[in-house]
Image 1 (tube, rainbow, N blue to C red):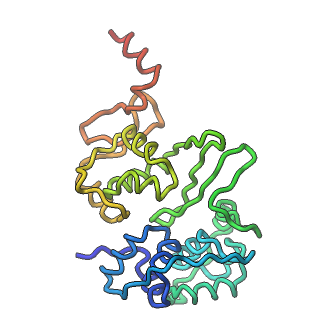
Image 2: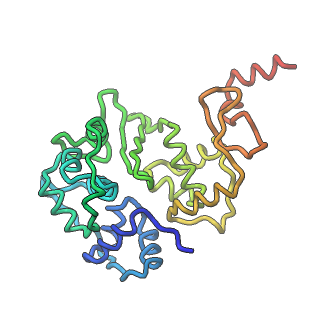
Image 3: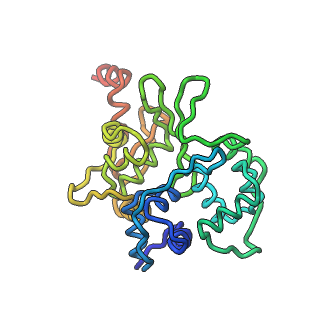
Length: 275
């Protein structure tokens, strides 16, 4: 049984428009191997392998804007709402939709998102008349990278500017977990998220992700496979019994205290006084 992918229709349109593997992978925020796999599954023509052409015009669309446009289009946003959120004109939105070959949408399914949703996305995407950058530097000297998850949600990855230290959040923990459940190699996870693969491997261990058989590891990320493996695993996302607000993966009748909590000085002192 074939598992559908949210972006299959967009993929078919881009292949039909003659976009290459590199362009499609960039626009959809996935790796090239996954694009070729979905092309094969859907029975589409194989895209060319020429590199993505860089546009240097001041008003050229960054790759992140294409990904957000595709999400808005597939979610049924009206073109005017997408234009407002991205800081573009309606004509520009339609021009890029034609260029990408995005699917037609039934008029009755179109909707205008709530104003606060548009405003929030404007802040997250850095539109408001500014050119979006994958990495921005707020006043507190924290580098912020904004990516689009497979679910279409926005993920902010923050790190200290001077030390390149990742600020781990529940959303980021979930992102690396979902990729790991899908058997994606930790080095491929690091490359996709622009995080040190060593940091990814260490974090996966600390939040209790089970180990993989080496022969099962892959380069691409298949969200459907991850959901299926998690369903069969018997693992759950559990709140730590010692440190409230901290979550980790554990077998159904497994550990109730996370590795992070066990490494803390407070836990070690508590363990000593218990005897």
